[in-house]
Length: 378
Image 1 (tube, rainbow, N blue to C red):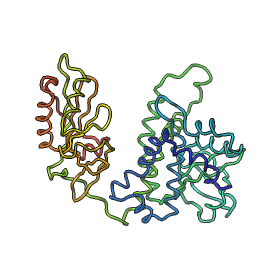
Image 2 (image 1 turned 90 degrees about the horizontal axis):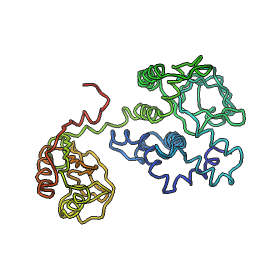
Image 3 (image 1 turned 180 degrees about the horizontal axis):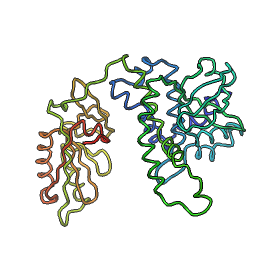
Image 4 (image 1 turned 180 degrees about the vertical axis):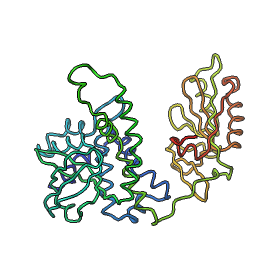
């Protein structure tokens, strides 16, 4: 039985509305950066890397999705939800495979002792330990000894199996992975070693390095995907140059302006005034987009961005340009604009709409580079 056939019901279940936001979020983590960096869509990406590799990467993202809790408040995964409500339709082996995937980690493995069409040995290059014999039919016919394979290895009914999502890493991509993960794993290990552990047998023999590797790998699959994609796309297509201007041709500088509400002003009254402004379009609870007055009659829709000719365009789904956004958060109003001229115009607009309702603002200004690389030092 093929892996895809075993997961057919689960794949269909992922189309349910309650899981769509998480599904989209996880897939954006895996593919979004590459699509943005190179200014391409999924169809173009498949053309560049091939149908087979695209299918494998889709599998990596889908299997990562299976491990994610619904939210911070809801620890259920889609596997838990599906098996509770539709598990009776699946065979015992399929249920066990889904549960194993739910609890699995994506890692890098070194391939050896290949028996084409039957099995191979995989040694975990991140967590270490002894190699395991993995039953696998298709991949063993094309892999070679010492290949570095990014994948999930699961144990079902006493046998180790290869999950469906996999990617073969070049030497350069493997080196990039090791360089990327070394520092964060060390920090996690150092933090774990400083935590107080319960007295007794549970505290004895704790390997903090191993613990750090396990913790890190729980959320690292998109980093592996991003490195693999960068390696594959490098030289095949040029990256989109970073934007220098907004859609009006003004130099980019990101202004975040925070207004406190004045004494007596209520969020409800503020929202009412913003809803009446002809140039503002409510997107969601507490969030408005500043658009041209002529476009403000459009129905609310999602928002996205793209870069063209060094200009950053932020648009609604219908193509309407967004000039700034206004976010009402409790007793504060936050204005966000991507140039000084837009920020200045938006401040005049808000002062007119909310006269007497907002106090003196505090402003933070960031460059595109600072926002694109939040972890970089000064």
